Image (cartoon, rainbow, N blue to C red; front, side, top):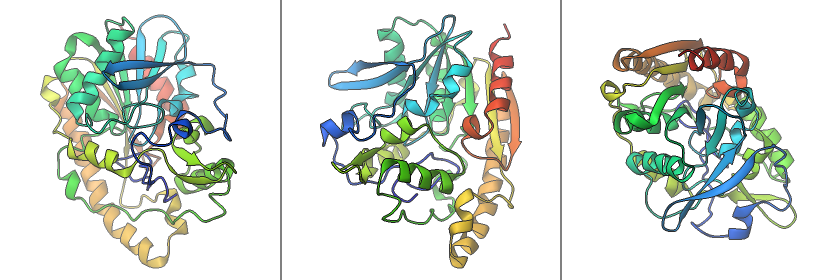
Length: 334
């Protein structure tokens, strides 16, 4: 829905609520009306620099460490189901980047260099020498930086529909129109809001992931997003072109290769004028995605690419079985 932003290719839901950084601390800690985190993970807060703590989820397991990094707007709870597909052979953790969920919201540090340094700081604090990094969407920018700058800390990289939006003219590309605005009924409760988001996006996130994106009033009504819009803007402003040629680690890319016939689930709820705009803009977007996949394939020396076609940006939810199969095949190879 409109409260959390459109599910266009590059970004996961991007909060556009009116929360001020650091405000409503109690509400940011947990929505009292939505104690919906039923996952068996452990939660800890790791200090990555003075005054900045990141929420780190630990789904258990032993073996090599698998680090799950989210798309823009999400928090690590978005992996609450996916993570359990790997903790039989790996130690699986997830990081909620600064500015989102229950992690700190400092005024600075949203450039890709700092975000990658945050991920390494988490490894340092947890005494993890080397890890496999798995990133969805905008997290691809962190994977690129980690692979290029911290090669001794990176065992393997997995890109989940995480293309290089720092190049190829992405910033000036016309985007599909946003989904229709949330109605008053959609905002009546967290559960109603989650249902509206699922209808619009074509998949259902774990409820805990949604709870950690929104603010509610004492009655349980959804009143805004935890993350103010300027934080997402700062992340976009701090993008850099991927240095694929510097990445030495083996890399798997699983990408949604869209065609001009691609329609996001909310397309059918748009008015005719917005549908026409969508039809125009999806053509240039499809061309960009095709080029971006090719840049990854030719740029990363030790890469493997799996192309899905006209599926959902949230490949790890909508195509979970396929993604898990291909990831396990790639990760368990020596």
